[in-house]
View (cartoon, rainbow, N blue to C red):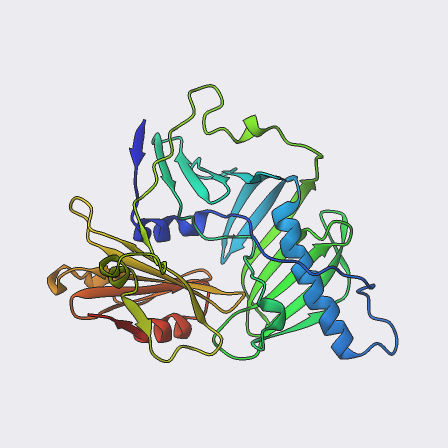
Length: 349
């Protein structure tokens, strides 16, 4: 059994395979979400945005177990998910049902990725991309999206509300959500580019909501000794840090960003062994997220193959040289958006 620590760019390569759950504040729905004669478009929009917010809370707080399929282009992957929530937080186990055997186990913010075939285990506080949408509390007040109710439908035999989330500009994708009418759980989602093009789709084929789930089902190896967590050393931006360290952490600024995108976190990984130091900055518009990686290395070490725009399904990445650093912006957003964000990076000297 080998234990590996992984740089952020390795997680980028693994990101298309994995998912996690979401954390966000919720607003209760106090009224029926079906359209009635004479109901205003403003009220329908409010109902739709409140329903999406309740959905994000359901993804975090419900106990659920089910199977879903992930469709991206002509590729279909089926996954099993087990999710538990209690006063101690969230536990989640995600397992592939086809292709290479692989699992992700999440204990709150700590993530373990397992490849049984190669006996490799990766433990980190970073996590791969979410197949189930990740939203934050600013979404419902965002001017970058419009919320609309659709015609009720069914998924896996379960009655659902349907909500359309449409972007107001070209710098983000749109979404379509099918939400369980009883539990507010997300049962199906579509990622949309424009009004008609489906970029990616996730759909549950079976789901249950058990009252309790045994914590033993989230053990990394149920029949063996539990693994020790291997956490990467990171300096985090806080006002209490010594100035020398704070200057290292706050090394990245931005010029003009696409409207709505704001920085929400920055971490700095100093040089360890032969690895180059890296700054990771996360930006979001409340719905979409973009990661910016600034790797500090000499210009002759820059990988020419990583320059420019690359696409894998809904995920776009843009790499560029910037003197003694290489910048990569990656996210589930249009290609023009990651390019604009990468080009807006300003590295403090």
